[in-house]
Image (tube, rainbow, N blue to C red):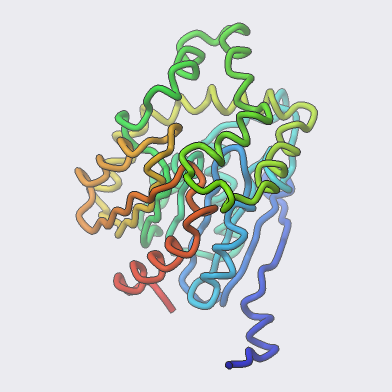
Length: 299
């Protein structure tokens, strides 16, 4: 049995930090050697950097892991939606400035759900900085927006109070739990504290309006899909897809089209739902290590 020295424990510990960006307190998790290749971990809805709580220490021997909470999520500031614009462009700006604060000029990106348009907008700003992509149920193609999105698309097309109220169900406890359980065959693998913690965030006064604003702003990502795809074609980042194939929100129809634009692509459709890390965390971690090492992006 190998004993890990004290210095190694300090080096690979997860640090929970807060920094000031755009007059907001932005919380982030930081682990791994500072001189190791960096992976930005970009979370989805309705969670936070907490979704990476097991992946971060698992990979910290080989990579530096940075996982921020967007404004209105997790431990970051939650300004009123009337005074701060909750948009994907503003979220990309937060992540961009965090990377610059930390003097990180090259990085891979793990993008999931909302993290995909955040990360891909960042890639359009700095294509030369992106070393690789890890995509977990993160959409960049029209084919990936299916039935789940119908009431949201109705809201996009007609931003009236009735259409906004029609998607309030998305922040209710039943829906939050459903996002974790749907498509999972063995529910005993799921930690109930995940959706309980997410719901605490959603239930904060004013957060429902924040989430409704973001649901509306998601429409601005769709016209950027051709730009995202052009980034894939032009820059050809090595891309690993680890996709929960039973996901109703971002179904596997959104995974296939990546092969049209990317040459160095490895795709794994996992027998799970939206939050694949909850059930397939070790498999995903191992595939990331193997893929990035194969592409010479590892310590």
